[in-house]
Image (tube, rainbow, N blue to C red; front, side):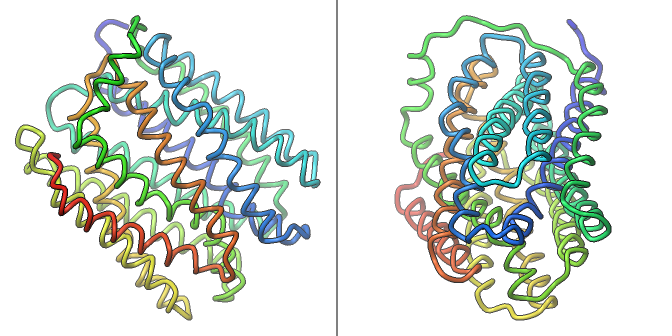
Length: 383
């Protein structure tokens, strides 16, 4: 497809990302509660959740190189089949070790999807209003995150976890059909030394440290947040879903606003540091505050404030990536950033599982994020 339309270049990837996020979070929001109810220990739950980022950690960079050398569109479609296979398997077992194996399969599919789809989007992004385009893409992911959590809560309450698995398998059908409409970019032969040169300057290295520190709280969210809401705050599964839905959609709106504003300050790629630091700091401080919440109102207020930081961080981070790296090598370089995200998520999940209290991991992740911002202020990278 030599000259894809605006709809194909921008709307279709956003819709595919939305559906992928919906089916993923319908599962991830409640599977920890499901595992605890099956009798798995908190440590086992932390280990199982860590399988996703662990597999991504091993495969993301090779997948990123493949995305630059092979058709991203074909890899996106392959990833969806792999993920669906793992969900079908999870429907058939309630044992720890088979569950771990199937999560590894699903993690491989998720890693490929999470590299190929955004890399394709970056490769066709163009030069104008990149922040706003990335804001809409981020918003699609976030709306799916909220909708999947909400739908999963109602399905789990009315039926069981198996019904959520069926729902997610059904969701892969429209996602696959939409993926057939995606634009594509031909692969190119690239030297590994080119990636090394891209990643070796001081600003990129400091950026990677900030990405890691910010990503720690994603592991805590995946392994402990639903359990915190359900077990500590006493919220039922429908209420958990509504909290995710409100938080995610608020973040989605803020992501579009953040993208618009980031474009205005993105003068030659050097005006984003303040926005990026502010987003990480707000996210980190509100993660610490979660330790002191005791009811739905406290949690909601904390999470909505947290959404301001997360949305600003995610959109600004995406725009910084588009400034740092050229389109032809975006897959491999983006894979390095995604690997950093998954490593942070893995560490956050393990930390959250290892410490007593479902909110403890959030406080540790929040403190790490604030310290990383202080470090960056002293080093002064150019974003």
